[in-house]
Length: 154
Image (cartoon, rainbow, N blue to C red):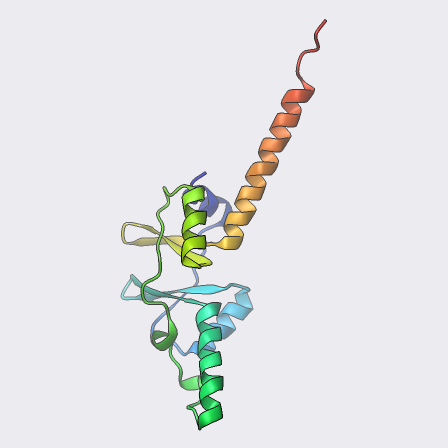
């Protein structure tokens, strides 16, 4: 199975933001759409990824800083300050096993899918798990049907 097959089933809806968007607006978007990542685009180009991991990290850092003195309001944080500026990207042709290995090795739960300079979608660890489960269920049903229809010896 390839990444393109997972995208085909999942759909290619893209949720994007810009580097200058307020982090608080992105958190609302992510919560409203029940998503864990946003693609950061500037002038039509991928410039980063914002995931719940970056949000948690900046909030934890601010909490620690707050203990030692005043910190600026959360509303002043922009995406550019917290995004991952160099996300691992995958291609539509990548094999799902290679994709899983890449996600595990890099600890990335969300990977943008790029076809040359075009963002095709985002694959999450959840998307991969669901696709593999569905593929295994399909194969299981086919094997059971094959066994059931096997000609009896006589």
